[in-house]
Image (cartoon, rainbow, N blue to C red; front, side):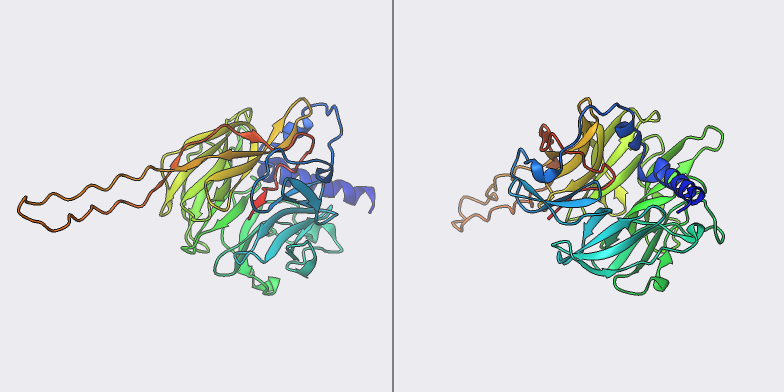
Length: 368
């Protein structure tokens, strides 16, 4: 590739990742002088042996964490894996210099099929796809840079959707991004048929870009905001029951990040609770919906390590009390039915699972 095309590709990447995809956190890894070389995860061990399987990404390789040990599954330029609702396949982004595509992989990392074809012999005609998620109904949602005009170099991502396994020509836009902001990213499909996603906005006078979590019920629906503009929230993650939402919220200066959880009540968010603060990003829920994994930049090197935190606890079950009855009634008192225990936010101190790795901060872990 000649120098001009390579420069153009880098400019596209800067426009894309510098706003939406890196969500203001990309500068953390580059703002510090790195004082040591990170180890590959297969040369390290997790400090806590968590149940189930966890997938994380470092330098284009997907690693599986089981029994406290990491094992490489893929090599190359893979990122942002998600798992299908049946738990049998992975949908993963393969990122090249000037485009990216979605692939379906087996749980062992073997390629099963390519889902998009975004490459072109002319770099301006390439496309990007990111953040794939499959709904329970079998619809593949993802980010896609629909061109404003043929050959446009402006990169704003739209949320697109198509039946999983269908031809890419059947994909349709669900959202329309705000121009020159980075666009709409990170779609989360709901069982109701709608989606939650990160909607980016920009102030052309100040150049300030921020994100709000947004709900939309169907393709083309204007939807409504779930978070105020003052919070600057993105990176949404739903627990398996789809009753709790985790997210990352930033200050206007981008110097402070928080992981916040809130109950999802229909298509509205309830009261919010901050559970972690720092250079945090990419939360994901445990299979039982009580704990979070996330990535946090730590130490003088600024590398992103894996953290674990239990954030939900079962509310105490009230002791059943016998119903009152007249003294002459010798029948057995009927206990008052106890309500189903509800989950309440009760964050425990976070635990750092790794110390010598450097995971990709914009690729959320998977835990299944």
